[in-house]
Amino acid sequence: MPPWTAADIPNLAGRTVIVTGATGGIGWHTALELARRGARTVVAGRDPDKAEAAAASIRARTGPRTTVQAAPLDLADLASVRRFTARFLADHDGLDVLVNNAGVMAIPRELTADGFERQLGTNHLGHFALTGLLLSALLARPGARVVTVSSSLYASGRVDFDDLMGERNYGQLRAYNQSKLANVLFAFELQRRADAVGAALASVVVHPGVARTNLAHTGGPVRAVLLRLMRLTAQTPAEAARSSLFAATTPDIHGGEFIAPGGPGQRSGHPTRIVPDERARDTATASRLWTVSQELTGVRFTAFDRA
Image 1 (cartoon, rainbow, N blue to C red):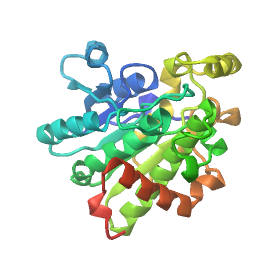
Image 2 (tube, rainbow, N blue to C red; image 1 turned 180 degrees about the vertical axis):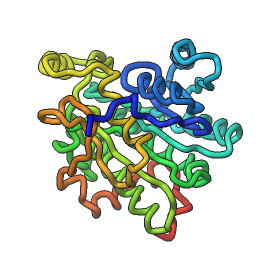
Image 3 (cartoon, helix red, strand yellow; image 1 turned 90 degrees about the horizontal axis):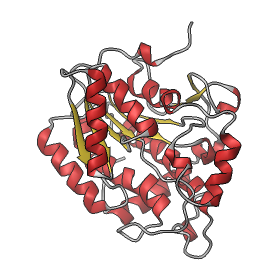
């Protein structure tokens, strides 16, 4: 069987999708291909002007019949997350695919608007709140999918509940790895809770491999070193988007799967199903993280409360 490519994406007419962090890189290419196949696509980005420009560039490539909407969304500000979801719920009767793609990587310690360490706050807590606030729209579309983008570095992560925000011992890469493990734990716990109440929702986690994106260009010396090390095997953003697109559109995808590039070391290649590291299957840590995330964000997944 030939390897999967974006050309294999089925017709998505009538579907509604949101892609976070879609103003450039992997997110932009994910949104482009979903719109190209006919999905009503919401380009969510922190900078409203960049979001509008990204949506316009997608429309220019997909034709006047496509519906591509820009929407401001700052995942490092829960008030912005709530404004975004309120607008979306007012304008749409359901959501077929949510791609939790946005992220920051290995930055010096900063705080979000809500006082969270910025990497955990953006990469995990912002997406946790976004998914919870959009849950009613997802459950309105049987078979809806939540695709959460992690990183292969999740396997080096540890959730430090005693110093979750890095107040006592902060390391740029350590905090990033923690946030990417949190992505994986959240995606799998979301599926367990959906299954427990019989919800027709598929939660899938992906990692894109190594890609040449702005994520590795902005920030301090840690990322500069990473960028130099990765150049030999780095994919283009379009190639790296394949894992997300496969998870979002392949008809036979199942909730609880992990999709990654199938090449050497999962650095590049066509998307394939992989077996996650044992720490990704730590249900006790996942359940505790879920509870802590609800407390920190104030967002409850009420449809799953009896799970």
